[in-house]
Image 1: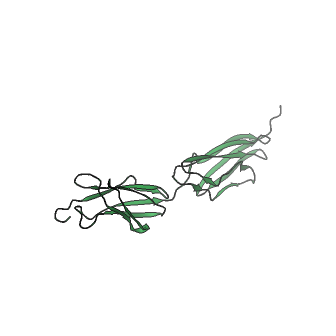
Image 2: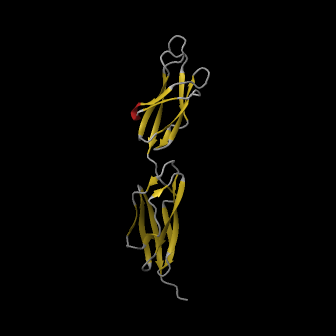
Length: 193
């Protein structure tokens, strides 16, 4: 800090973001804490955004990685020229309520259904690129419905069906993007009334 210049601070409402989310930067005087006019730059992604008189600006970040966001004031300003903060942006991912689904006993003549809740807590839509059931015995486990996208901040229900073709234990795997959910159930003899 030169002569009578006062230092500046840059803060962010969050430093760990999911791709497509916005971050609010606040640039303040290190002495008074008041917002100041400055420019927030993130060189790695080409951001160069002025703050308002209150020292704030909002930036949406679509690139992945760790970036240094800096705030600078003009050289002839009463404030020191710059301050910086690290921002990390990751890919959004889906949250699944469970790691496995157990159907228990199901009669060969009576398929059983279970619901798997898939949540997107990110502020952007997430595509389901890979969704499939892999069975030790083909067709024993299947999905009754599917979806290609989970909208931002929503849940989707996937209905899974266990339809044993013969008595005995069955296992399978549901693959959803980069996640794996184990499936199991036991086929029983049909009940005779």
